[in-house]
Image (spheres, each protein chain N blue to C red):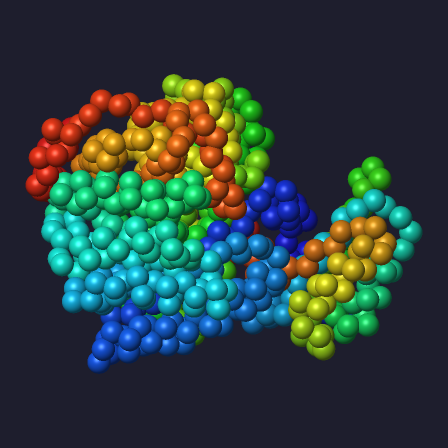
Length: 453
Length: 109
């Protein structure tokens, strides 16, 4: 037979039982050529350009999904950083464009549109500031718009002024969307070393080094990896790494197949497959469960960072062998609310914010989807961001922070957002104030890249 | 006919073009009389040529894997898939249809 029956049944089992799916097909679109004579003409040009490329996206994705029998969960659009297009002379600009695009997302059946992005690793332009100050309104009034702010990079250093500002902005977004448990904050990522081809939200934007339009794909297969590990009882960690590598290879190949097919049908170029294992709140689709399948009692106990390091590195190796077009974030995600077993570990007290921070030093993409008490002061939020960003900058990797202050809730309280965002429990935050330190502001110089000890 | 006259088969790693319109149909469920007949008659009706077929019974469970050429099938792939799923529901088995490329991608370097 063309394929071994065990191969065919293995693929079916991955799809039907182990929740293998393509998490997102993300269409990146350059909008920097959309300047019009006036603001309203610019908005219309952006809408027109998105429609030109994205109108068939939904139906093409459906068709490809059916052809291979693999669910494709999200269709998304990543735009060039909006701050670069809009300039600074129209304060209402970002909000008006966001509401146009929010309607457009509904019209063309797209889950999220990202790109309300400011790249401020070295300094903030008036346009960046205008966009950042508009975020509380944008993220609380729209449903499908995502934003990101890159506050640091290994080449430029850390913009502490921007980190300070973002602490304040996050509190404001949380306040404005307090009716919905601060959900606006789930649509904003604070980055260091933000990748330009990331297909995952909330941080996706179309980098300035990209072409006019490009398809990037994010796969998801924590369930598959977990099952594979569960079947290898008693094998040493070298062998476990091998098992993960082989599995990651297969998952990545599926992502590449889907990406190439969608881009061919849309007539745009294929960009990258993001290798990240992205969990969902479904049982059996969890990164924490992989770590537990490796032998730990609970995610967060001693050994967790090592387990995550083995997992992330083996995924990258398998993925890099499977596709020459690997990019984006490419690691293991640990979004607390989107991973039922991780939330359980927080609930039982095994997993705390400090351990999560340690875990982010070996995986992508940082402190993600963590509910914090609503009364956490803004300087403490800036302090948490600063610590996480430092890990990324010094270790030359991407990190992101997505914290959600939930007004009226204290540590241990339950929070439900629903859908892919899941539900979680408010984590305990060390209340010591970093105000006099982080409040100094300024810019931390770029780190030395030799003498690496 | 001598053995030498039989063309080289099966095609193991043929190129993309010869596989363009091939699908894998997998049938899983409790064994009963007439599963193969029900599935293959539907495929014949829809002009799907069966190129390879294998089946196995483990205990009371039945699995059949079938490779079909859909190049002459007059209805869209999605509709064929829905009709197969519906047929499966009628006879109490689950039927999956997938284009062969996904298996090639996952299991061949």
